[in-house]
Image (cartoon, rainbow, N blue to C red):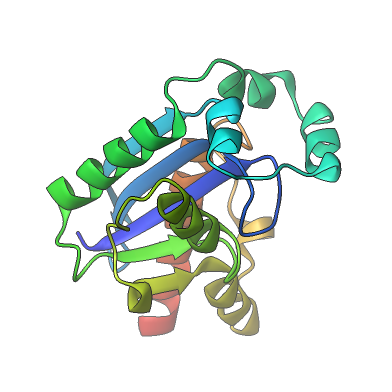
Amino acid sequence: MNHLMVDLETMGNKPNAPIISIGAAFFEPSSGEIGSQFSCSISLESSMSVGAHPDASTIMWWMKQSEAARESVAIPDSDLPSALLGFSDFVTSNSKTKFVQIWGNGATFDCVILRNSFSLCGLPTPWEWWNDRDVRTIVELGRVIGFDPKKDMPFDGIRHNALADAIHQAKYVSAIWQKLTA
């Protein structure tokens, strides 16, 4: 599998936002099959220590989320550099850097923040910039053909848990992909 859905939980919405959780799942959009998965919660302090900047509105937003969502990021598994190294190992052990197509929810969010965090930590990004893919664009294409995953696909898991969100996004990207290619 060369398609990788990534979801980040962050304490900001700009390219320099601190990452507090990474969830990722390889998937095959033509079949909807979900493959290998990665999940890691990250110390906010470690993200900030390399130069990431939180914003108050995102912190306030997190305070209003479900207890389950807040708990999923409350106890970090790792510091940011270690989490990124683990993510990089996950990517390269499941695909070739040249071929992995990384999907993020928004052209300026997940992939951009993740790439910036690799840069802040002085680490190479385990995918090529030309392989960024945007979930929001394919969702809009789905709506054009009468399929709205936000309304038509139930969510399974805890919303704003990075891995649960990544898997859900992979499922609805696959559903749209299949409708578009049928």
